[in-house]
Length: 312
Image (cartoon, rainbow, N blue to C red):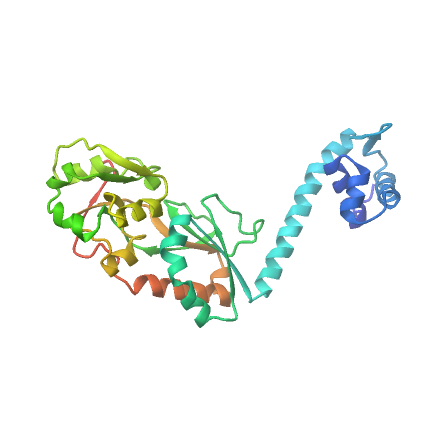
């Protein structure tokens, strides 16, 4: 039996029919007639020397040979499609797709995007706000901004900003609670977006870092960091949250971090893209702009004492 591959159109016809388990639906997907699709599959079976489908009265099922071939072909066509999309994206300098979490998008990207649009009118930015793990090729994503520990194998990865986790509040609340000890009487807001860390950098960990024996009661808990910061900005209490996402609010004085002690963790915001693509003009332009914007403001941890929450 020769090793040469059969025509790609015949393989494509079989893959679509096996995926739909219907010649009619496969023909509709491929924009051919059912008779033409059936002819392609029949020619494939003739070349193979074995049937790929059991043709029943009103349905089809895969033979053993068809069951062996179908998943491999589906994976192969997926890889071909991903490679084709990746090459087309690399040649299209007008569109840049970025994914970031809702908190980073709301607090760091959205307030600054007008500046990028003015500086780079030739680049169209598309944003996917979400926390799920994206596949760069399959989901046609160019850049991901992610918070966590990694690892970032196979990716270009660079830390965006150093940070601490600290009590953040409005200046009027800072005047009401001038010392860490006085926070025992304050309404405490919990930002549980970093609860995946072990041990968790929570209120009890912060009081312990200050040498205060206190089992705090949390008034309000938020799963999204931007919601916790908005609650603190509204005067609803004191949020134990990340300085990285409060950078603009701290720089403007809307929120303050009045105490010396901050918690430190190994988690960071990272700028991620497939290795080698960081030099693509539109990715390099976005990276330079984003790092310049973020590093133009104080990080919020200057002059503070950072206490690690890692177990010794």
